Image (cartoon, rainbow, N blue to C red; front, side, top):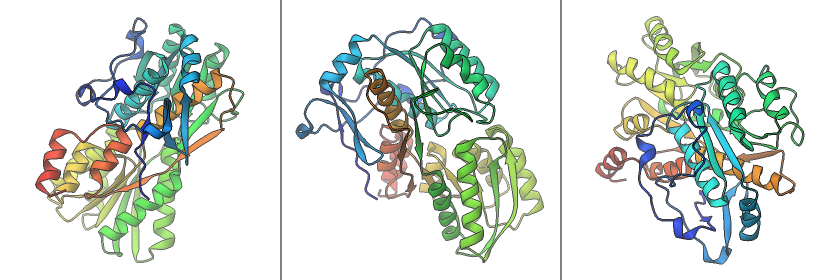
Length: 383
């Protein structure tokens, strides 16, 4: 599938690249952001203007041009809205979401009131939501953790009259148009199946593999992990899944991987639920000198990509667009404030990342060019 990068902006004069602060920025806690009520400069984002589109802010998502006209943007600006975002992890994926959130807010004249991450922890998410409520924000973009119990954390947000746009999953029992506006999501099962195909190809269609999945209730990862395992079992009879380890957080992956590899030192490869824990696994594999061991994961990361370019252990990455996830959610909230009908779900595609398309995938996923170290590695590889 060819990725469409065209994005039509009302704020064309803002389209120049504006620095690379997101490469080094640390997570900003919602607790200390009550006073931050002005939109900062957009991150290092390449924007492609299309004269035929006319004025407005539009990009392709869920198979259509999604955005607002110049007139609608002026209406949104007059509302003096402020939004906040919570990302699921402090990672390049999380920073990509923040970048898309900030750029969309700037384009629509919405103030960025707070940014936080929860590290997949429901307790941290509750604290972040309480902080956002105290700030008096008008809208929140976030991914609910532990969907079975998430309503207890979000009911106070709903009661406060704050509009919600979810990414990836929604609290059990919540209905679009009632407790939340829309859910921006991916074809998660398709991404899990892509990862299975990738790992099968990497080990030659036969052998023995391991897997590390999220063991808690996390709909995004649960669906992807399950689809990987189902696809591998149904499609590749000559590949044996030796054991599946579970993690509650990314920091658990190193110890889980060590245990798995101690029990199965002759395994050919491993699927890791997403790239942050994959970094832990990569360290363990390299420390053991397992040069032929193949790892496939989900979500882009500089270290994983560098290892892939250098023909290391990372054999494949599947990614979605963190940047457009958040941007689409912001547009959905803005449309709701305008009284427009918003789809219950906005589903975007997943993509297989290769060394050949890595630059384009990074731009699509994170809304910025590849980091300098990765650009240099790609240049050296002739890509």
